[in-house]
Image 1 (cartoon, rainbow, N blue to C red):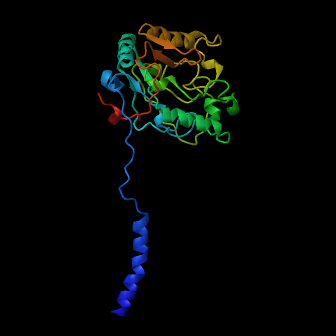
Image 2: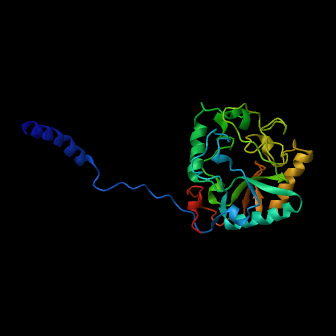
Length: 266
C-alpha cells in the first residue's frame, strides 16, 4: 500500500498541472461567413454552361489549388448569373457554349495571390503564365492587386467552346509548360475557340483589342465581347476573358465566404 500511495502522489502533480493550463471552456472554430441571399450557384440557373474552375486545381499561375475554393463551382450574384443564361441561349443557337474559368473569388484567395507574388523564389508556373514578365513587376504592371472585382460577386472569367464540347485533359503538376501566347496547338490544350492566348496569360497579347490579334482569333474575342455586352457585361480591356455585370448589386463590398454549396443561404 505505501508503494501505491507514492505512485498516486507522483501522478497527482502532472494531472493537476494539466488541469491548471486547460481552457475552462471548450474552444470553438469561428464559423465561416455565408453569402447573402442574392448569390446563387450558376449551375442552378443554367446547367448547360460549362465550368472549369481553374483555382480549384493546381493549373493556375500559383501552381497550387487556391485557398477558399472548396468546390469546383461558379457562384455569382443572381443578376449576373441570369444575364449569363441569356447570353448562353444566344450562343447555343449558333453552335457554341460558354465556359467559365472563375466567378466569385473570396478575399482570402486574393490575399493568397498577393503573398505568392511577393515570393520571388516561386517561379514554378512562369513558363506558361508569365514568360515575358519579371515576377518582381506583377504589382507594378497591374497583374496582381490587393482587391479584385471578382470578390464583389458579379465578375466572371470565361470563354466560348464549340459544340459538341470535347473534354480538356487535366493538367499534371510538373509537366513541361508552354507559353500562354504560343500557337493554340502548342500551348496547354483547351476545348475553347482560339482566343490568341490561354486563360490568365500575363501578357499584353491578352488585351482584348490588341492589334496583333487578327483573323479568327480577333473574331472569337469580338463574338464573346458583343454577346456579353448585349446582356449588360463590361469587359476589362486588359483581359479578353474578364467581364463584369452592371449595375453590380454589391459595388463596394468584397466578400470572403468560401466557394462551396454550404456558403449559399438562398
